[in-house]
Length: 407
Image 1: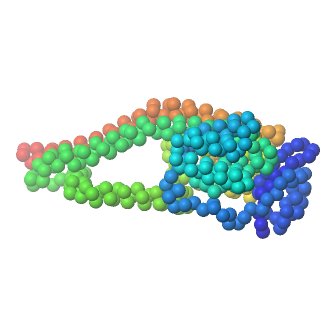
Image 2: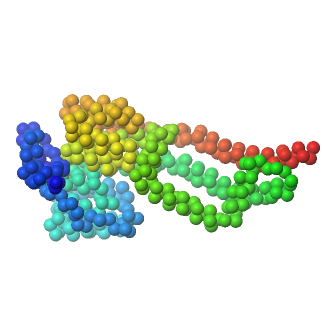
């Protein structure tokens, strides 16, 4: 059954919405919308295999920073509100950007606009840069005539996304630097310092403890097979990345993150903030509840949230409210989330409630990231102390054995 993109309006309440429907033909779409009290303002069939949407191999390794897209969207919103044509606005922005990849993409989008294509069609050819959320919101803005408003909503969404991502990354820099320094010091000790110490043990007829034997073997391997060690580490990193790209890997990593001490709490708050902010933006833009949840489920990175939202879509289509479905997932959606959504459903102000919920969790993430160093410092101290203690015990035990033999 073919799928259609649509926008519609309720003539009584003035409510506008858009999204995707499966029907035999356009009349079927109109009939389905009429049963909900909506009159279609545009209906367009979705091609099953649209041309030019394939991702080139080298495009997978090139990216455009979120900040670059954020600035582009905000500037585009200002230019459109000033009465500048889309083609001229894109041309101006492409000449201003310093990112060569983004510049080439914007020039291609502008060329599409000049041939009669819409902005959403031009952007959909670059899914690694303009994701499904971006393209769908632009499309709804075009067909509803509210592109200026949608661009403003999208720019705000990207700004909040950039803000929360920057705070989380900033909080992780300190522990990452400490861990890298620990690994570097351990490698130096194993390759340069320990060989001179353990050389004494090899000349003695003393039974060495298992810890000492392990460290000596590791030291010998690093010194004599340094390139092989690098290859093994690289293979593990590549293998890990490939595994995480699989469905099993994504599920395992999502589960691991959610149940990690400290990190799990941050993951829950970040994903709740993203869910509320993105879903609110889509509803404000006129996307339907079902289509909005579908887009959010594909945008969120954590597999546990994807699974919960996909389940919610089928439940909502059978008449169940979103708050009731989300209540079944207390480990990933704290009780506040379904409670707030229930209030929105009862009052008919779901977008407003979701926006407030997003702001609440964004503030929570800000507070956590501010206190991150004080939370992580004791854990890092324990790790460093444990590592130093392990090396110390491994080196001191043989010495005590030698002294006992002398006595």
